[in-house]
Image (cartoon, rainbow, N blue to C red; front, side, top):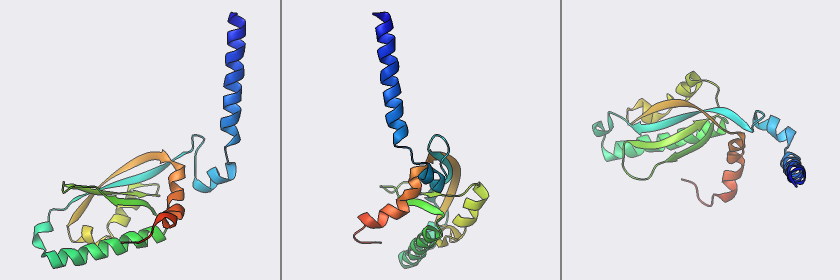
Length: 150
């Protein structure tokens, strides 16, 4: 009985392993920069409320925000910004960026192009992050579910 259980366990494990491996797409993994775990390195930027927000009128902040949104589009078009979005609420933590770059320095250079960063309305806290390489498919999928852009 014990041998039968061990044999059954090995057979089931083998079948599950084969099924999991049959979905692996080596070409796609390579295209997305995935490692053997389907993961890759990104840099995540936490957007925080800047120290100079109060220096601007609502109209000026609206103009800065328009520049911020245009810059998001530019970085996405460059293929460097994979995810961007605000957090709900009015806390100091305002939003995130996830960059497809290898170094904090590259991400810092990109964040410094943001008019909201330049104006001190936002500031960034950058962290290296290990996440699914499938995230790289988001820019391709996002337009397919977007009815109206910002």
